[in-house]
Image (tube, rainbow, N blue to C red):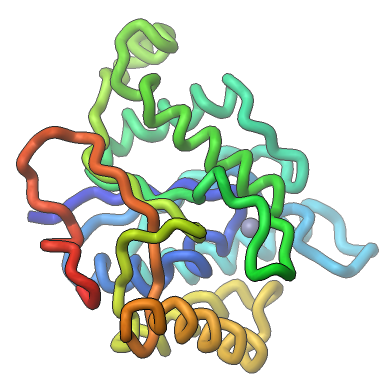
Length: 244
Ligand SMILES: [Zn+2]
């Protein structure tokens, strides 16, 4: 059965870089994807003469190209890039999106990740987006009494079945992306202002190999997953054996 999948990330390109291979496989399998972008990525330039409006306009075009490769819808919340916080306003906005889209699966960041690979401080927007997503998932999205103003908008509570978080230091699910890896690079490179093809291929090949090595896969993405629903609905990952 086709599932509705909602990704929740801070910036244009976050879903594609983090989970692009998995999303491409899900799209190929007929699942319906919605990409929620909390910010417009208006700080995504190294050129001080670029205006935020020009950056946003450029990135919207790039995002549309990436979304087309996934057959995905895009929902933008318009928060300012670089200054994101996990506020109650953001939590309410995410509950609104979840209750509208009514996804069985939510893909988001892991809010516990502060550092990566001994070389990288996780962007605070990534942690804020991940924290807000997790706090919207439990318990706000499924409780009538939280954000009653959303009921007035006709948005009834909703139960999300599965949550897939990444990047993460505590993976429990690995997806073999070998057969869609070239498509993943093309998907990421739709964000042309951020990702030049050569270095992008080199960096993402190295990362996918490192992740795959943990489970004997050539190229992989990994996730920390939660089953929030007690229903017996089959997991989107099947039996969750490595390589699915
Ligand atoms: Zn980002």
